[in-house]
Length: 499
Image (tube, rainbow, N blue to C red; front, side, top):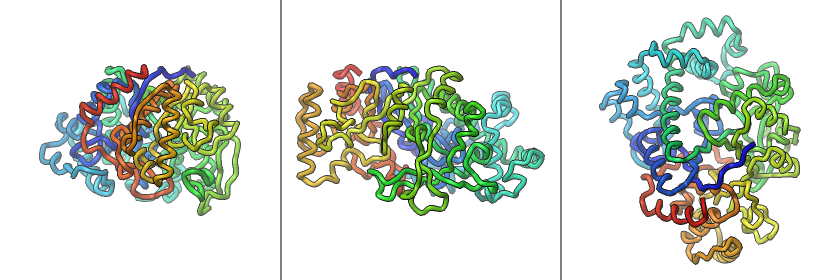
């Protein structure tokens, strides 16, 4: 696998962009944010998974791991194509502030269906898109869910088990009303996304996308390929994914995702994974593999367990998966999310694959000189962050400290900056956030990523996700695109450290 070139980046998901329609989209604000990144002199824009979200609104629990989120479709672009009028656009205007997913759920599909009703499904480009069959399982799965309003294990047996003749007849019966509507959503999303990506790349900026390790149970992925997952004869999971108790949760995290049948995947040369990564490479320049450790060994919990405290570690595919991907796709720019409970096996796999790991400054200053997150112990082939979407913001992290802990933290941070040859005076918590950003950018890592919340020194009101909390996540939005002053400050630090 090839190494990433030295540079800096900013983490900001599409949903977090400002705009008048209640959630960030692929419209004007996305292009304005790209222009802001260019002014910052950064080389990377990192986002979270672009997928259509399901229960809980999490981009890590999708109805299809290759889908695009219809909420991100730019409505103004649909209007420019004559698919919506001004009155309809006005009905979608929403108050500024965090994403209100319940309001989107109630209202956005109605508008998208109006646009679809005016769309010519005989359009040559759309017919080609249908013929490629990339979203065949997605379109069928969503059409079935629309009819039965149930997870796939509640579909009539012929549909649940995907009997060929039954599926063919169902497709014919809903071809224009549902099947093509679902394909229309993915067609518009992909067309808009690839246009935005082309613009971002033209500015000299690469997009880092996120590939969740696991998929949701109630998804087109599991329904379409049940043989690739650990399910019983009724297509129910026997074991589910999670992690044992750790920094984030005393009872562990019970994700509930079905586990892969790695033996079945190996038997056909990991074709499902190769196709998934091939499709991701069309959307992203760099792919961050979420929960990388699960490819070495993964944690299996009995289906039906209430917590993740009791589980077992099982062997993952390891290097065999990466060898298959390289043979099929060549060198791919990956980042390994190697956080959490890491053992020697995970480290060996990362070193064998050559993937850069992640360094988190919020974890660095426990006073131990051997701490692997300290800049002094950081190798070039890594990516340093102040924090991730699963952490408190840097300011929220500092606000959680008592005065004595904060003084100790500042002392250790000053020592780390000094070891990197940096003399930056700071005293307040907001100034300390700036110092953390400088420390990340000064680190030896080839890539340093600053979450937009830390760039703006926002508190935990701007936090993206609290692991194990089932509601209230993924809602943060910027009130506007950061301005010239913020860009100038970032640019000065980026240039100073040769990024």
